[in-house]
Length: 423
Image (cartoon, rainbow, N blue to C red; front, side, top):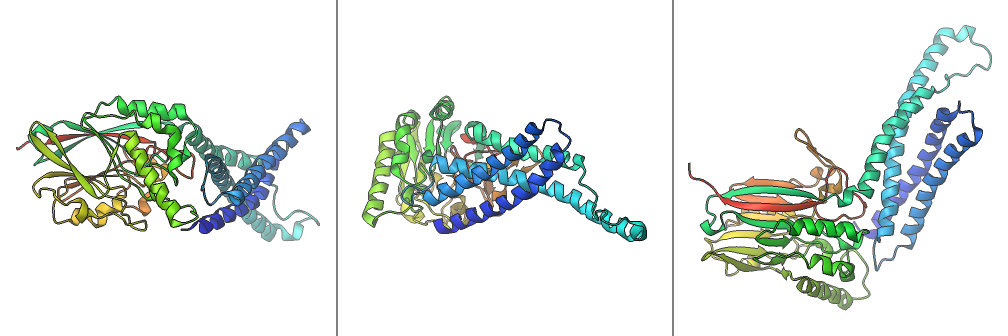
């Protein structure tokens, strides 16, 4: 969807949230109607309107002034996040209130039908809204409000370590126990807390893996976004090297450029930044990782995704790879694995992807694993296997648009390759 389409959607949400304010305001009036301090009562009611309408106005003003050459800044993402938080909170509050009002409606109809002849002139058709309904609405709505607020203030930097052991029948013996640290989707243009980012980098480095890989989306749109964090991310080191690929956001397709030459220059600068970081950027190419006289092939493709830019050329990337080699592929978008890699004539043993962020929102417990992104991506987080071809989808290191994470926390992946035991 182009920028104008997103803006229209956001403006529609803003209009709806202003309508909801009217309904919520009267629900709050019921909640505070018995309060004795009149000033406190007014402070709650008008304070709510000031905050809610103020956020909506600031968001609309921000969207209207957003530069097509920069895209969303952390300020825009914060305004959007606050708008979404209040919008969902008001929806939940209004739904509870609506259930109570529907009850009032049926009670009024029933009472009128039964007592029509004895009703006094001017007697209200509906009974007054009961205070406890507003109290329940506030308690229920407080759950998403506090949850999203936590996601914005803490959750987006609450890095989680995901350790997995993957088994392969034909893994070279020398690589039995070989470890890989993967991060993905840094989205440096969204960061607003350098100290928190450093904690994530320290956690990744502390794993002391044999190999480090980054699977795309270093920036949101432009190469300059990573520059304040170059020193930090250059700290990521591994004995067998650091390797990276491009993601869909790295091509600068989501902002306006004055001409193609300017856009191309941005991409070249981004590639240079990969080199400065100490990452070997794989652009439809492969390298050999050698250990103990044995080898595995590490392959990296440019972005190829369903509904996104499709620059990746797997055939080109596989040029020169021994057909019997153990192969690890870096490909940003998991739909590449779904539609191409798992059907590729030569077996690619392991594909490492990112891209989905797990929608930055969801639930992952022992008994439940859900995110709205599951309705878009078959493989949206974690491990997948089909016909001996394995996929791992990283949940992302950073965040985009919504300046927070709730339930789907930022991920640092550590994979240990093991040779399957013959039984």
